Image 1: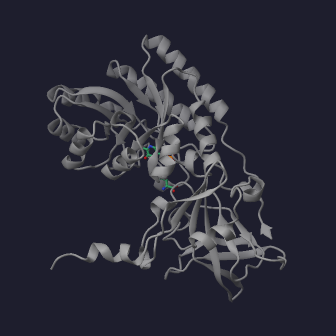
Image 2 (image 1 turned 180 degrees about the vertical axis):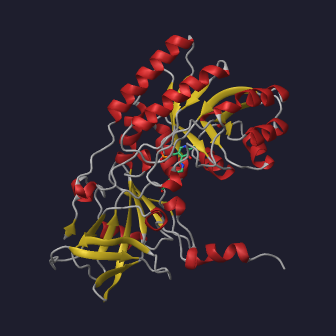
Length: 418
Ligand code: LLP
C-alpha cells in the first residue's frame, strides 16, 4: 500500500521499490533519479535566448560527484564555495575555467588554492578584494555586488538587501576600481545572488535589471551572473504549481537584448541555480521504528532525524511525505501524525501534525524533494552515520554512489598520535 502517489506515478524508483532499496542498502537512504536530474538541467539551459548564456550548477545543493558528472554531461558549468567543493568538481571532471568560486570570508590560503586551480573567483568585500590582490597580483577577479533587493523562503536564506553579510555595495565602485588598479587586477565579472527559493520571478527580474544598470559603470566585463534561487514546489501532494520558467526566461531574454543593444558588447550571462536542479531528483527513505501517543499526539518514530535532513528543524521547511506499507494491511483514515527522528532533542521533528494514516512499525516513509540541501547538510550528530546515496540510472537500475558511513569513519579522525 502507498499513501501519496508522486513516486509511483512518476516511476521514481524505476524497476526497484523502496523496500528493495532499503533491504539492499539500509535505511535511511537518499535515492536520486537520473531522468529527473537531466530534465531539470535541460529546462534551465533553455531558459534564456542568448548565445552566451550559461548555467552554473550550484553544487552546494548536492555535491555527489556522480550527480556532478551527469550535470556536466548536460553541458552545465558549476559554482563552488570552498576548496572542498572545487576538489569535488574536479573529481567529477570539471576543468578550472568551468568552475566559479564564489567565496565569502576566506583565508589567503583558500584564495591561493583557487588561483592555483585556475578557477574563476569572485570576492564579496573590499577587504577580500584587497587580500586577493596581495595573493594573486595581476590576476583576474569578479566581485559580488549587493543589488539592494532580496528574496527567499525564510530570513536565513535571503542574501540581498540591507540585512545580510553578502555583497559589495554598488556605491563602492570607485574603491573597487582603485584596488583593482593598485594590484593590477582585471575585473572580469560581476555576480549577485538575492536569496534562495522564489516561486514567482518578479524580484529576480528586478534584481537582474538593477544589476545590469550597475554593470554599466564597470567597463567591459567578461561575464554577468544573476545568481540562483529558483524554487521548486515542496507541496506537490497538495497540488502546488511550478515556477513559471518560460515567463521568467522571456523577461530575462528581453532585458539582456535591450542591454546588449545599448552597450554594444555581449558578455557571458550566467545563472547559478542549485535547488531547482537537484531538489526534485532526490528523495529520502526512512523506516518507522516506533509508534506512540503522548497526550493526544500520535508520534511516528523514525530514523529520519535532523542529522539526516536538517531543513525542517533549521528553517521549518515543509517536505511532503509518502507512506509505504508491506503486505495487505490497509491504511486507516489520515489524521495528524507528528513524524520525528531518533536524535535526543525535542525539536527533532521532520513533520508536525501531518495528515497521514496511522503508521506502523516497519512502514517506510519517503520524504520528497530531498535532493537539494539534504545529504550535504547531514551530520554525524549523536555519532550517527551519514546515509548512503543511490542513483536510479536512466536504464532504471539502482547504483550505489556513496556508501553509508561506518563506525571506523567516526573514529578515524581521533586516532592521532599522542
Ligand atoms: N549562488 C550563491 C552565491 C548561493 O549562495 C546559493 C545558495 C546559490 C547560488 C544557489 O541557490 P539555490 O538556487 O539553490 O536557491 N540550505 C538552504 C539554502 C541555502 C542556499 C545558500 N546559497 C535550504 O536548505 O533551503
